[in-house]
Length: 580
Image 1: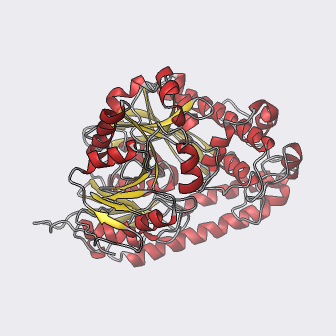
Image 2: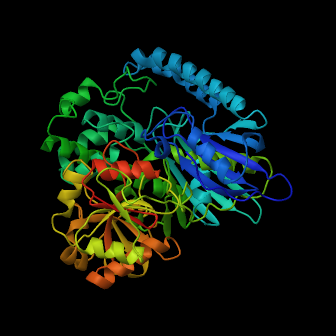
């Protein structure tokens, strides 16, 4: 695989810091050169294996090639886990042995903690072998999450809330971050540690309902809109009780975590009180929707409780959210609607892949250097292919041509009802397609959601599709009081939206909107402008360029495969129109 390269950098050798997320899930790499973020890529998008845990060889190779560097030029490497911090979990072992609900798992948990500690130390050794000239530094996982969220926000000061399944022992951290003229002060003021974990609980129920934990929590969030939360509300309140400082988990319902797939994450008591574990091939029933609704409701309640607490502790007017639970756009929408903060920021990659950026930033700061740059308002950070050329028939059954005005031509095809893949510019960061690796469709077609779910994405019929809108006209269609460039917030909709484009409104009356400006994404803004000229509506459906179970297409070959294997009508790829 080859990519365009930058011209050699004249003069002194640049200071290069690599951040790595690897060996767990969502492998990724980020590169700072002279303190500036020059690139970030998730390995799954380059190798075609969703959530891959392999060392991000393709991502690293591209970063180095693009910066005209070699492995020998890397001065420092930041890894997104700190092995010694795992050992803190062992101090809880006596308590777990005393309690009846946790006794049976106490020793297996302790053994597994030691195993993970040793494994993480070995990973640091492997990184040192990969980069023999570099100093390899482990970074506390939640610090990597939080630094990335804050540095990408552009705020001078903010509260930072990180909520995920598990760092080393931390599952929730509340922090206050400040930028000075030269550096960044990031201070954790409270924490919640395992076994209390909101991400663990959400993943456990996701798995119980028949979807893949760590991948399909979004499906459960979508299903929740079809359910009655009241049916299992009391159960969820017992399972995830709120405390003065945050929340806990009831080990009688969510058993003590052991870092091994051999140990179930919901108890027989939980199963008896809800429903049998659903197999993926079995139909979705009302009881599953009701359980999803109760889980989602409790998640929102806990997240609001945590945001109120971090606001009281910091008195900050802006909030940064990160960690896997920050990908729950409905919960983020509830936080925005609460009005505690003037603005809420979720980085484009709030999950573990984004910790590659945070790890690089942490190492850079810890070396006594000035605060990193190039993170603010940046999501298009990956490989690009500006010089693509195609023969008249790039694959059997496909025809290629290059229209004179690509944005106008694409808008015309969308207005005519075609569903089109868009592959343009640098690969975006994070789980949501943001206009560079997207599938676009007209929201004016009443059958578009069914077509997309059934023949293009091959996924559940209840799953909604997100809209993308020109930021300057967004208030006419959405009630969100701030911009949403990374599709991170579920917004209410206006009467105009319900009347003219109901296809983008989910059952709960919200839409996970992306706002776009010409500065942020000139080509996508042009397509929206042309579509509005043709139809009167400056809104398109925007979903990721992939099919269920596959990662977002990061390479031209992956995009062509997606066109062939799905019900897409055509693909616009770097100005080329590829049609069946």
